[in-house]
Length: 209
View 1 (cartoon, rainbow, N blue to C red):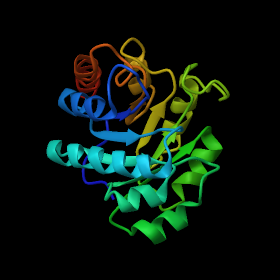
View 2: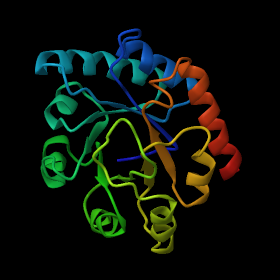
View 3: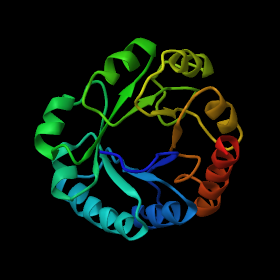
View 4: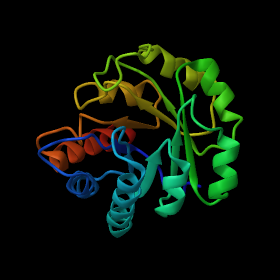
């Protein structure tokens, strides 16, 4: 369940020069509204222990904390919720495990999937890929047109755009109809995480007024 708007969702990325803890701390200080912990390499024990630490950091900054894919890790680490892909466990299962007060987000790659996702018990819908992205090279690039088309459908749930979004194109993404954006390399992969988060958040605020 969302009590605040998600305008900037920052997704973690594995780096050798900076820990997840520091990534999350800096992103929170820069104005992130939500942090999503995503790691494809860690064993279950490491995932849980890291998620616990990141959850505590986010609580200090009053920032939502979610875990990518792993409902069990989200539950055990007392995260605010989970983000699910189309091929992950079903939304109804996440709701059963986490309850109605937790956040459940889902990815949807096009207009029809977004329309289907709106009928599910989810709190927001991640839509993309808007632009080409190095984070996921096997996705279909939808472009800004998908956001414009979704806006015409009067979707009630927040649409969070994802895929190749950065400070140079984010204005177009928001103007096209996205309620917020999810970024990986643009913030958590940046040299100055806090500054980049601040810059993106400021652009969003200036457009939305």
